[in-house]
Length: 191
Image 1: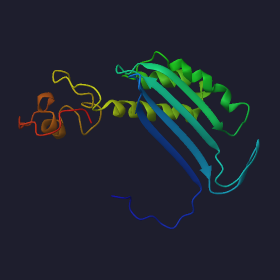
Image 2: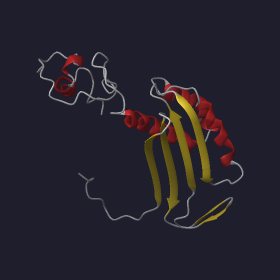
Image 3: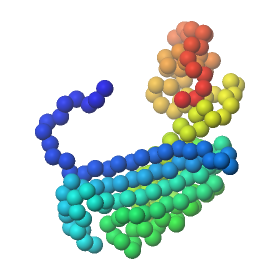
Image 4: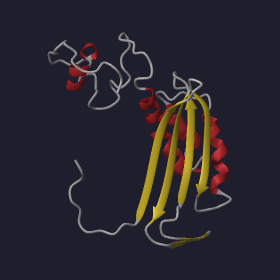
């Protein structure tokens, strides 16, 4: 279902973020993100003119990780940015993620390490997109353990352990007060 109708308007800015997940032939996994910002009009930066449709920002980030969500490698590239010779200098710093685990506490560590003047705002924003893509990338790739609480439970409002969705799809993990149908009609694998 699309958003409601909008009033007439003129396009100004377009940010396109794509994220893709892969399983490598060596058994590791990768997520790759691409961010592109363009304007619908030409404008001047201190570093020169940008034509309409020409990228103001174009950045790539790849994270290689294993089944435990531990980062094995990280690579950042900045192909377009407002301050050539300066913005792209920070990209090697993103290798600091090597050895980190994309588990609870990861986002705080990202902000602490790459926030404000310690990183590039756009590359740092891309990390959170890739972290969630990394989880989705593993869905269905690993054997499920029926004794272990599925990752998505308590990760969002719909899958709070006391929510009706958990009662319906994951009845053994339901912690609410309402009676539950123990049939477990839903898919028991992580989404």
